[in-house]
Length: 311
Ligand code: AMP
Ligand code: MG
Image 1 (tube, protein in one colour):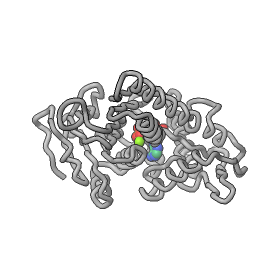
Image 2 (cartoon, protein in one colour):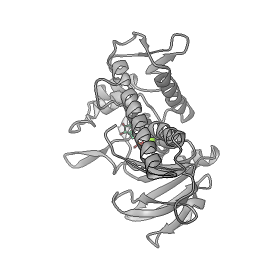
Image 3 (cartoon, protein in one colour):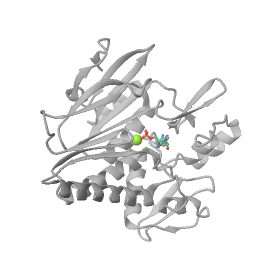
Image 4 (cartoon, protein in one colour):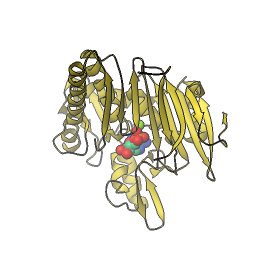
């Protein structure tokens, strides 16, 4: 999936811990073989390359994951759109970046959206609506992989641990010391610096979405990797969203969705749906923190004393 996984596990002894960690990596490798759009031989890559309109048989596991992603698409009014692929192409976000013409943008928007790839449960198939349509699993694949990795670790007897998958963290069990797992949240503009620290009890995952994670530079503008499916354009870099949830796939999908919804509508959506989310809003270099769904209960340390909790 184009990123790095770090696993720390506590188990009865070293052998059990190593076996559990190996099982976790095997689980992630399996999810990668289903969901990665960075290789041609994954199951999703075959669906994405199939002729438009042709039903493609899917494994039960991939079918379930895609159905889940499409549910998040509808639940967020299309802000989370796993079929954002044509827009990624229009802006060449996996290449050097380019400015699409109005006509290209319109074509790409027509090929994206919650109905761009349809699933049929009776035949367990998926089909692309147009030859431009494809599913980009970048917004939820890491969370889905973390869910499988956790099941593998616990299944092999790991008692506690921390998984860090390209910035999305999952913790389970009791930490070796202290009363919770300490998790830094990156500064939205300087991703190697921590803006805040969270204290999470075991059994939770924290996913962060921001434009500083990945972007391409075009002339004098920067195109972030998160697109607003409503306009078809990259979301302007306003800050970051961290979602804390028991289900890592949900945290992943919703952090992307709430980043698209932005610092005003995002907190309202999160509050209304009881989703714990922290919005770090960049106000001319000063960070303002907005908490929704009670997420401020996880914040233990403000690195910058200018940060205020509100919202
Ligand atoms: P994340 O870092 O989890 O927020 O996911 C961002 C990635 O998801 C991007 O790199 C794209 O691969 C994909 N993506 C971009 N925009 C969207 C969107 N509106 N909905 C779902 N996935 C998206
Ligand atoms: Mg995400």
